[in-house]
Length: 204
Image 1: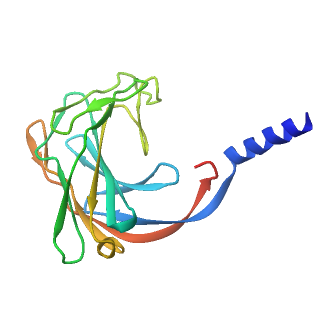
Image 2 (image 1 turned 45 degrees about the vertical axis):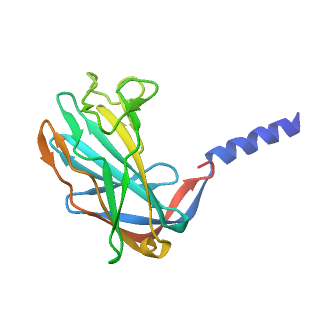
């Protein structure tokens, strides 16, 4: 009986406890972009607002220079986003540019309990919850950085570069897209190697 109580207490402490850790990552920056924390452990998302649509991206560098990331769109009711191409570009130092295609992803609709499949070459249709309080699962779609009252689309990509090229800094260029036939081109996003302390749950 005592052992069972100790085991339960240990599990509770393990799931609730937090600890300071040093996180290493590439910090994004671009004109008009807002950097926010996302996920567990905290990641860095950069967000842009264009014609009431929120566009986000986050990347990471794995071994052997593999740059992987996600491109997201929060699309409100009455808006239609169309990707004019489905490739992202990564450049590092002065060694040219490498490209990678967005893969089929998912869309969370406000109030839904699971995502649906989404294709990057198809129109991204807007949806907005009629409820004013954005509290998932009743009226909001989950995102890595919070919740959204709008349809949330997410697509992944990966690009292989020489490890030395992306160890300190690289530049990401997102594909052009249109919002209700208005063409949008976001500025290049610079990712610079950085580190910071963060309080992270032990169960992350």
